Image (tube, rainbow, N blue to C red; front, top):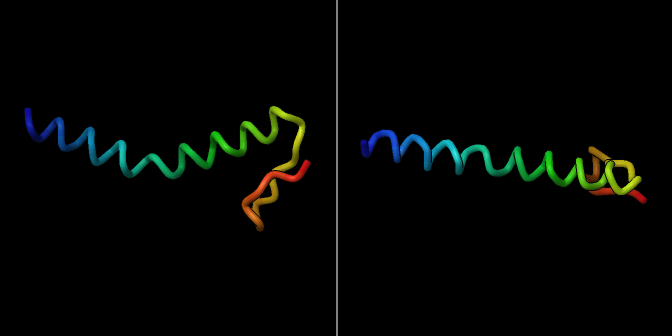
Length: 44
């Protein structure tokens, strides 16, 4: 049971940054902006 909890916690922590990046890009595009991958920012 503890191994499963540890696996879920580690998996969540490891996937936080890629998911948050995806959400930022998605919000930018949904609002009509253009994502600049070199600068890692939304251009409106």
